[in-house]
Each structure stands twice: as C-alpha cells, then as structure tokens.
Amino acid sequence: MKRFATLLLVLLVFFIGIVGGIVLDRTMLTAFVPLENIPTEANDSFALIAEAWHTITEQYVDQTAVSNDSLAYGAIRGMVDGLGDTGHSRFLSPEELQEQHDYNQGSFEGIGAYVEMRDGFTTIVSPIDNSPAQAAGLQAGDIILAVNGEDVTTLPLDEVVQRVLGPAGSEVTLTIFTPDSEETWDVTLTRARVELQNVTWQQLPGTTVAQIRISAFSQHVSDDLQQALTEIQAQGMTGVILDLRNNPGGLLSEAIGVASQFLPEGTAVLQRQDAQGQVDTEAAIAGGAALDIPLTVLINEGSASASEIVAGALQDAGRATLVGETTFGTGTVLNEFDLSDGSAMLLATEQWLTPQGRLIWHQGITPDEVVALADGERPLQPEASRDMTADELLASGDAQLLQALQLLNPDLSFFTDSPQTATPANLATP
Image 1 (cartoon, rainbow, N blue to C red):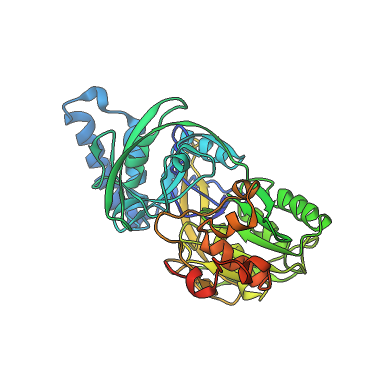
Image 2: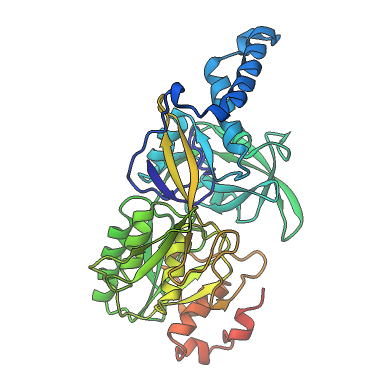
C-alpha cells in the first residue's frame, strides 16, 4: 500500500498517460483477494457483472474491440467511480501507475498542468513552472471545453486526460474558458519534457528578504529547501517569503520535511482521521534550518494538498503569516492498493486536518491576509526578479508578494517614499 495524502488532483501532466497528482508514502499492500473469499452478499452483484460480460463478448457487433483487459479495467473504473469521489479515488492501469511514479522523481513529458473535475468541468488547478501550459498562459480556474475541436464538457476526467495525452514534440489544441473574464479562446501547445526545478529562490531587490518558490513536493524537495535556507542565512537575509502559489502538492514525506525546516521537532504538522474517527498526528522532525527567521507564506487557489499541509501547519503553529487567497481544498489521504497485474486503485481511506483539527477538504486554507491579484497579473517568479530594481518590483503587479514583503519589512524605503506607495488598501484590490 502506498499512502497518498493527495493532491487529490488528476495530474494533467499529460506525461504519455499519467493520471494522479499525489502525495506518496512508501508502504505497500496488495489488494488481491482469492475468489473463494468474496463475501456471499456480493455474489448477486458479481453474477450481474458476469451477465454483462458474457453479453458483450458474445453479442457486441465489433468483436475486434472486445478485450478482456479493457473490459476488466472499465469495470474497475466503474466501481471506483461509483463511489462518487470523482477525480480523487481512481483506478490506474500499470502504465499509468508507472508514469505517475516516474513523475514523483521530478520529470515527465506533457503540457505541464494539473487538473481537477470541478462543478462537472475539467478545470486547471495550476500550471507547472517553465512548462508549455505556463508559457501558453493557462491559469488556475481555466476550464477545458474542447480538445482538438472535440467537445469534452460531458466526458469524465480520465477521458479528457486521454485526449490530451501525447509524446513530447506533438501538438494539442485546447479550447479554454476563463471564468474571470468570461472569455473562450483556443491555444495550441507543443508537448515537451518538463523538468521540475522544485526549489528556486532570489533576494528581492532593495531588501534583505528572500523569496523561495517551491513548485511541487517531489523527491528531495526538503533537502533542496534546507540547502537554500542555509545559503540564504549565510548571505545575511533577514526574512523569507515561502511561495506555495500554484503548487499542487506531491510527496507527503516531503511536506513534513518542508514544514520541519521552520518548526521545532515534535510540533504537529497534520492530523489523519480514518473512517472510524481514529486520529493520528504527524510531527516535525529534527534539524530545521530556519526555526527563527521571520516568515510569510504565499498561497492561492492553485495551492493544494501538500501545500495546504505546510501552510496549515505553519499557520496553526503561529510560525508564519499567510497571504493570498483561499487554497484549493484537498484533504483526503489516498492509499494505493496494488492489483495482481500491476495496476492499482487509489482509494480515499483517511481525511487530513490541520494540527488544530481544521477540516480542509472542499474548504481550503484561508490566509491571514486576503489579497487577490488584479486581472491579468500573475505571480512573480524568483527568476523574474533577478534583474529588477526596487521600483520595478513595486510596479510588478504581484500584490500578494508585495503585501508579504511589507509584513516582513514595513519600513522599507520604497513602501514609504515611492510615489507608487504600496499600502494594504491598494494591495488588496482584486
């Protein structure tokens, strides 16, 4: 059994076949059950499935399309979808499962975006940094209406994913609806191999504050963050802005490791509650590199799962001020049950809560300082500020970043002397 405190997103990494943005723990459990151990009360249901199977194999007009594997996989998908946990609990073929595991190593082929079924529509949760999706301007909340001209608004999430899949170098055209502007537009993307640069940082111009961007919680992120924090403090930085915007999550162990960089050993990071109400607590581990440096955290609706775990832990501990917008609202722990042929089911077996017991599923983490970006503005990436002046930073339009900076350094000269003074009132203007 592999435990996923999930992104609960289906990963539109479009990695030649992947589904599932996940937070992975590394325990294993096979789901194989001998036929003689099937409960007797399930016999009628299995008989019904057998009737349908027999009828299809004997009567369907296109016998070349009849495959035992495809029928079995379709039946399993149907069982999991019958739970009503659309886009979260799900079935993965052996190929999809392997590709998802590969993703957690930090690279894949695709357009580089994460999606979720929201209100019946396939919705972008966040683009991945330096991906075709980000370059094309896809943003959290965008809805995919069509793929290569085919309407997909009535299709289930996995079928939409299959239509967008394809190898690096191939093209796919998406029809997008952006709710904020009520615009519908087409965009053609060239799929590529996307390398996740998980941790980037930059000293913000005119300040002694470092912006650290974590793009996903894949393998070794906590180690990369610890190295960055060590460099930051060695260079005399006096504050840190941890940027988790549009971060869809990743490995549970890395979420705990990241939170542990800022929290004393033993501090609660999250609670896990099973169907019986039993609660277990995950705590910070020793060795944090930044237990005292002033800290703010940036979040938005594209921050999900592991991002919400970290943000919730730092907020509940009083360790950081959260700035931005309410997060996506994932909060189910998925377990991976491996089937006998190498496929697997991801089933929600627990929900996770913040250390103070706040439920996140469908609710999200609410920031301490609610700040929206103006229409058309995007989060400023650390690499983008590298060659900026302080005045250019102030004019960047990233009101969330500027608010976080002002909370750490309210006396900075460009907040008090510039003709474009960034006050809390105008920073919060959506």
